[in-house]
Length: 151
Picture (tube, rainbow, N blue to C red):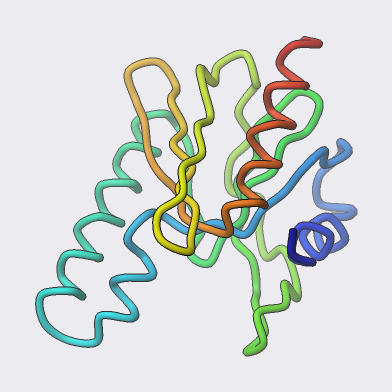
C-alpha cells in the first residue's frame, strides 16, 4: 500500500465526523487517459469514459472529485475532492462531496487494469467506476465488506 491512504485520513480530520476505516486516492475511470492522451482520440476517449462515470455516480446521488478520494466509515461511503502536490502527496481534503449510507451501496468490486486498479461501485440501478492504486482500492473494498457486515 501507498502512503496516500494515511495522508487522506490525516487531511480529512475535522471534516468527517466518523473514523475513516480505509481511504484511497481515486478518479473517475478514464480521467488519467483524458489527461495523458494529450490531443486526439485518446484524450476524447478518456473524456467520454470519465463523463460516463460522472453520470453513473450522479444517478446514484454521488459527486466525484478529480482529483478525488473515496473512503469508508463505519456507516458511510464518502467521496472527497483533494489537493495533490506535484510529487503525488495528498495535501488537503478540499471538500467532502458525498456521503452515502453503506446500506444503500450494493457492492464494491476491484479489478486490476494494467498497473492500476478499477473500483466498480453499484447502488441499485446505478453504477460507476473509479481508478487508482489497486492495493489501496482493495483495502477500501475490504473495509466496506467488514463495515457492512456489522451494520
